[in-house]
Image 1 (cartoon, helix red, strand yellow):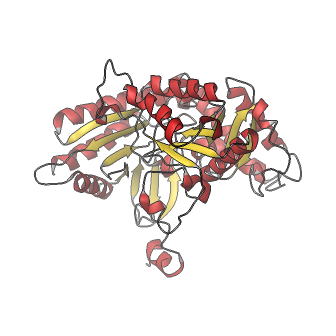
Image 2: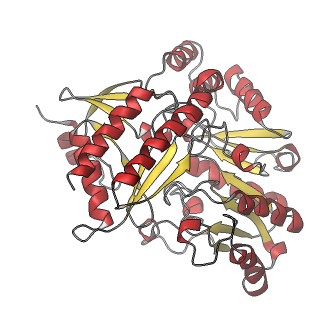
Length: 423
């Protein structure tokens, strides 16, 4: 039998880099099933998309029902129930009065959020963070700083983008007291406003509340809270990119709840519809009301089927997924900390909820990058799928669905333990 991978090589562009060569024919819960008969425990969840696991029956039922009624209407042509109902639901989840615009992908949502901020403030500049990832369209890539390869041959990009340092306390070169953010990370904005860009020229600060591809880095709460104060002082919009952190991933509906900070604009995607392509820009109503008709748009945003799936996804998350993410996240993290006690080359365990990671360090025999590569490859050989992240390609991330069970976590950690013991 010719595999799906082999067939793909003749007809598909190599630009979409894939983590594995697996050919998958079915997904159910926390498992995927391959064309060669393997059952694999999936701790990647489609890169934090299948937050309820594969083919959750309630989501599939809602999507199937919608398909029999309306597959596409065009949100710039007509109004339809699933779109309006989902907007109502998302607004009800917000701490403040908000309005919603739906699009298709995370990068598209971030592009739209930047456009919104620029349009309403009439300011040209944007501040992002080193180590960040916001997408691969030109706009989103312009505020991304996690991999120079993403920018290769695409310069120049959107102008007026400035990058600040993101606090990773365990790596900080500055003194730390009581796990508080070192003063440098606050002062850097004053320096930037003095030497690089006037603060009243800045439309937005865009930030991942927890950096995703950059290594699952959780900043101190006081830093995120300072960004809110800073933005309020200068009339800058604070954009939270919650594309990976949203919809139960961190044990909260949105990670902003953990930091006790509400942004002006929030972007979401990935877990919003449990596999159906959908994203959203959620912003304060007073901001959205200034985004005039025709200033933004698209054809497929807010597809009826995807919206119906999102409504079902949120219902399940509220009933069981978020609480389970908190409980299983705490249990999982304790198991990872036990591994750290056992293996000296595990430098750090970090994350909240079910957005967890371990960072490897060099040994006398192997580099951290080699350890990571072996850990992923050998775990997959034993039918457990993990993914990597991190600026230095030395971080193993764990993204099981929020519905993951204790036994599935034990299975995954047991395999990883066995693999690491052989290194």
